Image (cartoon, rainbow, N blue to C red; front, top):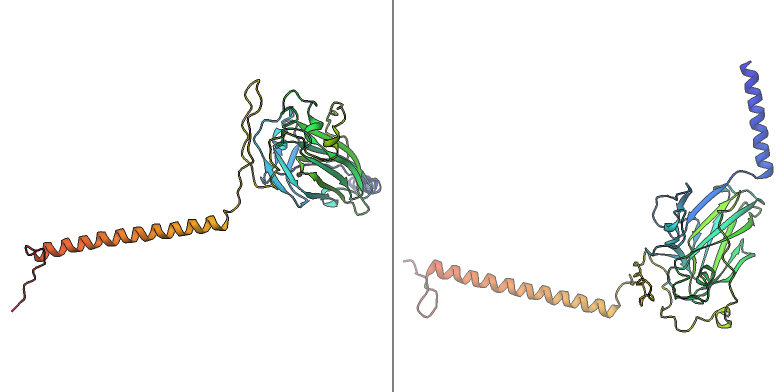
Length: 310
């Protein structure tokens, strides 16, 4: 009886594996926290486990501690870090469980952490190097209410965009990000063989002004061009309640000082050490003189008297 049950169980397992192989329906739920360099995972309040940034090529990272508006599912930390750059790419494949030719629901998470007005960041996204997903995306404009009552309405606001993308013949699924104005950015990726994360579509917006649509920065924005990316940027000051946001300068630079400045620093250290050496030498000389006077006595003129032995 036991051997008969084993045969039946083995037959069912074989049939199930063949169904999975034929349909490519192995479940996939992959969450990537783009820009997060912390090696530990992050779990949101819905139980989704977000892996640290991986499977990317190119770009740098940025991070701010600004509160994120509307991240009720505990994903605020996901939106506080970005991968950014003029061009970067992600590629996933059979290692993550993807199957050749199978369709996957891909949700891209964005958040504008730096600029304070629309038209300052435009970039495009493609899949598998041949499928256009987004053209000249302006996160600030798409996430906020435009025209804005204040200049902060599209900043620190999550934006989700969801697509159906098929893995290629090798089971690979790649995403390319290309900047038009300033850097392209990405906060997170969700790849699923099932449904999307459940993001609601952004509200309808009026057409962008021609200058913004053509990629020209909006006039009057005080922010400089965004840096290319570093380990982390400082938190930005909060706006006064009911008032406009304070003027914010660029994030602090972590680059090495210029050569001229470095040479000045080295020269100053040299002279400082030389001065310390001279002071120590003078102190030792005075101590030696006092010792000789105390041991051998001194003439009225101050010369040291040394008695000769017969």
